[in-house]
View: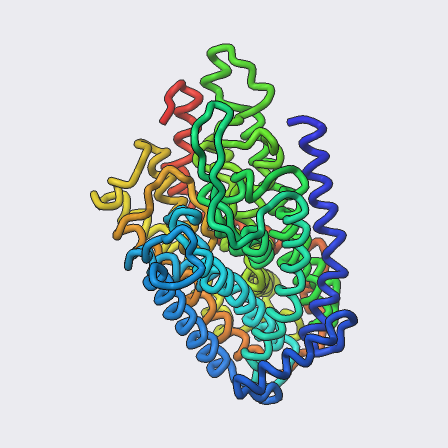
Length: 569
């Protein structure tokens, strides 16, 4: 660790904090239906979409109708994307004449992008045509992110409204999130990325000769536009197989910091939007502080582990001053690689600018833990904050048990129905992450895909299951997941990890919306100060984190101890 590394991390954190209020205030105006300067012309487009689709924006939906509309929309999106991938070889905008995607891989990819996971068992430049990238994957990058925002808005309305049977209109929330937030920001970020050297073209590939005289094919395509929404929507799927470690996808330090900002910008700003919507910005800053504490703890731990280097090399007398540079791009170094690894897994993004499989055991454990906490430390666009709100309900419930009174949060009593639904939300990830890991650890068809034995191989299995169920999409890169077993199992894991979480959240929102508001009293536990930050962080770490300690002990922890003893895997 050095001054430059810490300065880079501090600069990034300052950029995120500086953008929280202006971007959060903008989104508050958008979702309240207010006129926004500079975006007023989009109002005609919005109204045209409603007329074309036969939507009455004034007609609100109950939580069940809202959830059903969401599920149907996502199911249609999955079928459309699956069909596009299966028919790719016969469709236009395919300058490389790429063949149709196989059935199991098409299932995995379609499920991955519809669920905002963007797990990739394929190399983008050698598998997906320009049409598939633009009309298929990029479209889902927009609407899957907007779906997460819509669920968040429905949950917030559950807190704000009293004795209400409706939570808004899913189609309105979806359109506004896409049209006023994701699309303009994507155009801005795509322009910045193109200016830094990221390609944006419909050409297929460029033939070149190396200095040694060898022929080289350089794949090109509409990279900047795909990359912008990939990061802003916390999607993470790369245009190229090497993702944001690829020099055409992430050419230099300017493109790197722009992408890093885009990963956390919207999830962080939504905390301010939440505060405005519930009538107390302190509530939003409190949630932001809880997220920030865990995020900074992860960055420090990961950076420290990677800066320490490999103890086996140190024992051989190799200077560990640069840290562990294996699997990292020299143009980013240890600090920015560690920062990206934590940001992308904290935000349910899944993009990488370094290979997590080459991190030290403890360094690689940190992004794994960030996923296993439930992708709530900023988390996915919308999904991170509604996950944090579920933990907030559990935190006030625990506080209520300690003081002997009915817990309250934002003027709503938290009773048995909400606690049961919150418990279901909390239990889904560990059940399926540990279940998939356990099954894959004994099945020959799963083990055949491992490139490493021992605890590191187990870490690869655990990371893959965590990434799929957590809808993150990053990988340890030591697992060949493009097999029928892994494509099908991980595809189903993504399905469960997305919608088995959304339905309980919608049910909680419906239950809260039907309750009366309870005025604050002297016995009300304050949820807008440092004490609640401590309680919330403690609840997340104990309830969300300790579940995975035994599994982590079999993987990265024991690998670290064996590494100290001179054994490598």
